[in-house]
Length: 156
Image 1 (tube, rainbow, N blue to C red):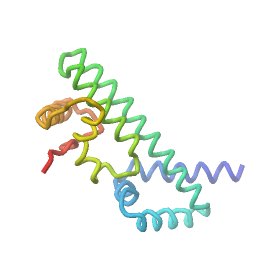
Image 2 (cartoon, one colour; image 1 turned 90 degrees about the vertical axis):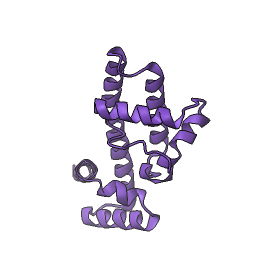
Image 3 (cartoon, helix red, strand yellow; image 1 turned 60 degrees about the vertical axis):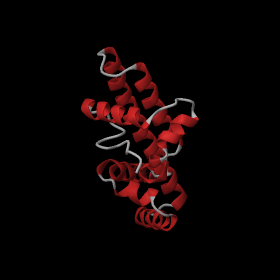
């Protein structure tokens, strides 16, 4: 019973942190030293091992990401039916989410974001910057999560 309570406490704490602030993603996607300090401090406060905290954080991040994608896919599919997105745009969006999920922890606001166009083209989609800009504007207007305002940044 005590072990279950500890796991629930860790999972609950991590979920609250993940859902209520962007601090965790900034710290966790930041350098290794900050990530280690955060994990160590949280483990100490909860009285559990750093491995348990790390595992709980990863599980919570994946769960939250999957829930966001499920909700967004519902909106994307409806936008296709309504003629607000093309099938090609939906394919690009789905591929971007796949890339983000496979790189979770890399820090989407880092180099990966700047290389999204290259990553899409490596997958054979032949996407132009103009297409990305148009798609970003469409997703913004539809309120589709996962990109947010200026979520797919233009190359500098």
